[in-house]
Image (tube, rainbow, N blue to C red; front, side, top):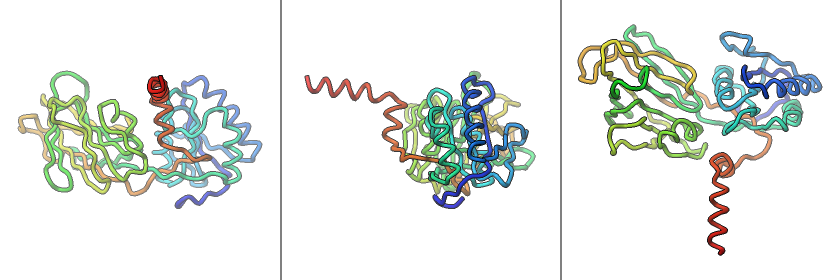
Length: 306
């Protein structure tokens, strides 16, 4: 699907949170509404590889943000949009609540929706074998150690071909604007509007007061080379906290041993993700609602008027 051109959907892929009890009732209503509007459902969870049938025109996710992130990565190769139905708690990314299922299915069937584009991020991971593993993510790529404890790892970072910094930390988060309200914000990173063409580089529990979150242009290319404390330790790169790739035989923190080829190259992905929207969504409203800013604002207004 190119731009915001919307077509009536006749075949819809489905991703569902398998253990969430409220998702089962939402699924029942979703299937009935789809049947009423003659929309065929293809269950992606029944396919171990999550491969989408080429006839699918969109994907629906029933769950929370984690389910939607998984659905977005499944939909990415086919370049089709994702509609998120929230049955979880926070739900930053999902479009609809369970009370909007029937209306949403009707809009999908009639083509009465729009597609909001979100930047995706890509990582190419190289290990000692010389083979490359490629990950894509909507929220973030994280380079980290196998387990916490046992000493910090060292990450040498290169930005656009020039040395940037050596981080001594538990790991490094490279976040999209969409992912800025995820792991990034928990690690002290900045929050960005989804439309800002930038990435955020945020160290995790850095052993230096000068190691701060950094916002860079999303045309930048970041290369991360981890160094570990003990021989045989393994570093990982994760996409959205779900897809994982290993970096084996990394050099030690001293710079000794290991392989120079162990690295993660992170850049903007070739395509954007598409999120289905039925109504206009204002980023400030989402932040106020999800971060609980309304109570503080209300209290401040009351205080100023006393």
